[in-house]
Amino acid sequence: MRGLYSAGVLDVFMQNNIQTNAIYGVSAGALFGINFKSGQIGRAIRYNIKYAHEKNYMGLYSLLTTGDIMNKEFCFNKLVYELDKFDFEAFDSSPIDFYAVVTNLETGCAEYIKIDDAKEGLEALRASGSMPFVSRNVDYKGSKYLDGAMSDPIPLQKALDEGYEKIIVVLTRPKNYRKNKTNMPYNLFYRKYPNFIKSANRQFEIYNQTLDLIEKKEQEGRIVVLRPSQNLKVARVEKNIEKLKAIYNLGVSDCNLNLDKIKEYLLN
Image (cartoon, rainbow, N blue to C red; front, side, top):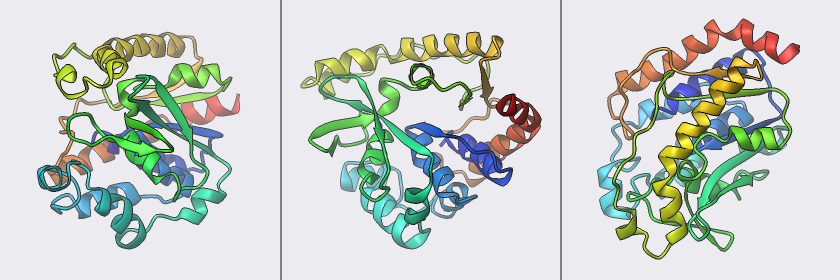
């Protein structure tokens, strides 16, 4: 739910007609970032507030009854088609290239799935946001996937390798944040996937190395970075509506404060 910071940033982009050629979304960044390509300002914060306490949305009830902390039927069917309709037509017709970052369980490597058809790509989006231990493996086009953040949590290097000259990185942690190593039981839960275990155990290193790269490129003026100006405490599956509003509003505020810098960077 820290990803609502990114949703706030992207809503300000849309309100100020800031466009991009491509978006690389990881986990919540993919799930909320699709609204940028479809042009739906406010959708991410709206449905997250409205259904924060809906037992079939996301949380322990869903995990116990379906095996997924993020309820597939509610999130990727009922929500997008009925409750807060996603504009599939606008997404598909947008010229923005949208990539959902996922982790291949067999290889342990990141894959960048380009989504041109949103309906066909819903499972790739679900895979990007499917956290280990609390999500079942997602089958997509013959491969098994989980959360993209396990292999490439901040895909700056991928964007650089693809040759993008102007890059805006949106982080959900404040400056100077670094991940610590954790002793999660990947060996127990994912013993069939040794390459995934290796990537998962190195995830904190990959994350911190990328943060070092971000700071270097930022100092060089090569990229623009938006990150929370305050360290707000938000749980992965946050139910407190005021906290959800606060992290979203911080994204809005931080982006508005940096709008002139962003516009100048994109124009020059």
